[in-house]
Length: 189
Ligand code: SF4
Ligand code: SF4
Image 1 (cartoon, rainbow, N blue to C red):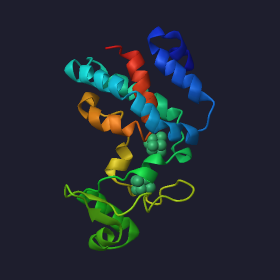
Image 2: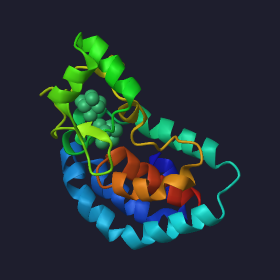
Image 3: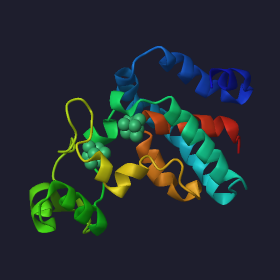
C-alpha cells in the first residue's frame, strides 16, 4: 500500500495524508477526519460527479479490491466510530432477528431501543449505540442490523450511486476515508 502511494505521482495528496497519519494512532486520525473531509469536500464532489457521469467498466471489482485491502489493515475494534457517532436504520427483519436473539417481543425491542425519525425510519434512541460495549465489541454482533454489516458500503455494487452517502461517511470512518483517497489515486478522472 505504501509503495503504491509513493510511486504514483498523481497521489501526492494521498501520499501526504498517508505520511501524516501512518505513524499516529487511530483516535488521532478519527479526530482529524471532519477537518480533512471538509478540506477535501470540493475535490471529492468533483470526483464523484465525474464518476457518476462515466463510471469505469471495472468499478465494482476495483471497489471490492480497495475495500478488502483496507479492511485487512483496519482494526474496527480500535475505532468503533460508526457505532459511537451514528446509528443504523433497522428493517423489520433486523427487528425480528435481534428481538429473537434478545428473547423479547419485537414490540418491546422497539419500545426499549428504537424511535421513528422524521422520515419514518426506525433508528436507535441514542448514540453511542446501546449495544456497543466499553471494549468496542457489539453485544449483538451475530445478528446486528444489515446496515451495520454493510457499513461503510465501500464494496457496494454501482458505488457511484451512493456518492452523497460516501461523502458523509468519510467524515466518520477512517477506512472509508482511506478507500476514497486510494480510489482517487487509482482512478484519475
Ligand atoms: S448494533 Fe452493533 S454494529 Fe450496529 S451500531 Fe450498534 S454496536 Fe455498532
Ligand atoms: S467501519 Fe469504519 S468507522 Fe466503523 S469501526 Fe470500522 S473503521 Fe471505524
